[in-house]
Image (cartoon, rainbow, N blue to C red; front, side):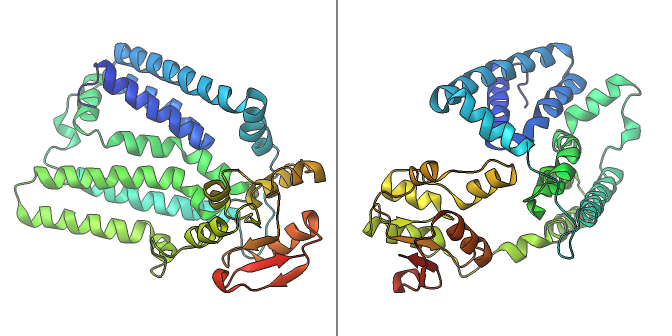
Length: 335
């Protein structure tokens, strides 16, 4: 931030870092990358202030969560269960080493683009002083580097996350998205500083290419047919609000919270406990489903095999698979 020695910007930066780690524990490397970057770029005094802000923010946020959910529950769900998840096996459709290679290729592509931008920038590295002073000046003038540095620090998390069971390609985002953001900001900064229109236009085109090529899977993930007024969560909520405490939606827990005001067991939550070796007994399971449950429904994007295994393990009495007009395309089970 520009006013790096002021209390409010420092505290909010630390606060958002703490909230990021609480929302996704794999972002814990933010506690390494951000203070270290502040130390190198701005010196020991700013580092101490930032570290103090992180500690204060962590104490405040952590205390609030502990009061709400309890220390043991947080420890079990945030640390113990993920730590017990086994490494994924190799199969024809999922090869972790190949995905790690894909990660490195995309990273090298982004860093190569960054090298071109720096090489043709209005002020090259050779114009800075030699030593620590020059490094600090370079970091201060090019603050997009914090994203690139953070992305590189996220490399171990991205690789390890892809070797765990339940991993998806999205696990690579811990590294790729930070670096892509840094490169995009670098292109924008240097394009704005150039007086030569041709090179400026070239950098803008380069940014467009970066967006299109660095994240090709983004386009496959976009579903044009889904809108704010018609999507699985909206369909689930509309049906649940008409049938209070009667419909159980394991793959859509948000609809249950909004319609019934209760958090029910989720398909992914139960599955992650099973992966870690923690089985759910009948009494515990039935205490967190709708009290007057008459139907169990899974959306069309849910794996059919997962849905059937879930029903066989916990809800055998709901053996009648049927279709409902209001839940077109969904898998619905009744007694």
